[in-house]
View 1 (cartoon, rainbow, N blue to C red):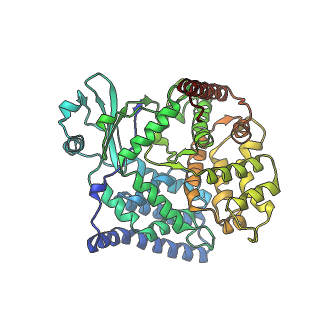
View 2: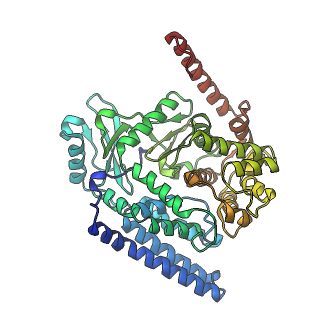
View 3: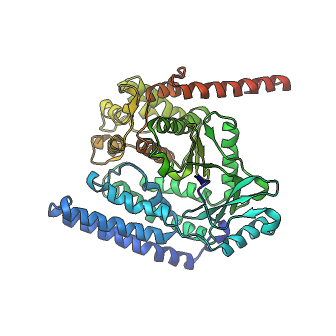
Length: 491
């Protein structure tokens, strides 16, 4: 059994403006920039000799992956978080398929090897943030952390009223490292270009805009008060839900650098992937619905689909953790995505093209055909229109990513000219993460029926879908009754 996982930093640790901060950014950026240059040079040299595959290519990629993992682990900042984000995806179009497991294994250590704070430091941080002694605040705290992440750690504790809670405490100084990285947009953009394979390609995609979007969201993660507000919102939406659980926040024991919440316990990701297929199918559907149904109902995404952010239960339900990073879409952006998905699901080539242009994904003058745009969207969404039930595998997800994100893959021409707003950067992150998790579970389900629910307001087909539909129908009916009693018809 494992418990609440995840953590973040403190604006008070931000380095002051001025030369010192600039020098610190340069000092921290220099090793990664130098490695990027050496990696590019080495790849060109091997490519010229036709040896980017085979034993020599394997040695090159293994050495590069290890060096990046080591440097990113030492960075303790935004670059480390970006590396963590890439550590669990099923495939990276920048890396040949035969070498992807090398990068996956090396970058996985960024999620597993974070050293914990000493108990004395964790205790002093907690007491300073909550303005009281540990004994007055908690009946008991276990100073052996449940989990240690890139910018903080989690401790189990018990309140004086007997409630079991999880306490997230961020590392002093972690925010300074992240702020230093975030001020260097060029470095972050270069790193994103490297890990996605876009750095050396001529594409219309705004990598710098994506870097700015990622920076803005990582900055928000530095304040646990924002995370608490996000988590309260999700907890309200899903309170009493039949298979989705969000821990309740303990407001009076939370601050900028400490977040106390209901203790959730369940199976870890490592246990989940070894479970029976029926449970894996149920867990995958719960995650899929949490991601997409929340968006379609509330234009809201939990934007950190990460194996450590889920706890799995024997009844097929899932607890969702870590709400430091969420994404809200405007009605215009949400409607644009829904229009594309609906046209694609219907097999409407021209409609998909029109919705894509109207949504700003391509310009009508781009040298891209409607058929290329349709294939760009539809092929990765094979799980919607293929024979059902459809099994999602890591191999399917790797091909999905190559079609969607590779500058040299089957949709290379469409990808070259895509001009989507950086607002959609986190949608790609969410899609990659969610697909990789469902693929790792090797889950089978009626994904097409779920897509019809989301895009066409079709009646639910799966048992879990029927339970969820009844849950929200009852909630909406209760809200209508309460509004009538209050004498208002406001939605």
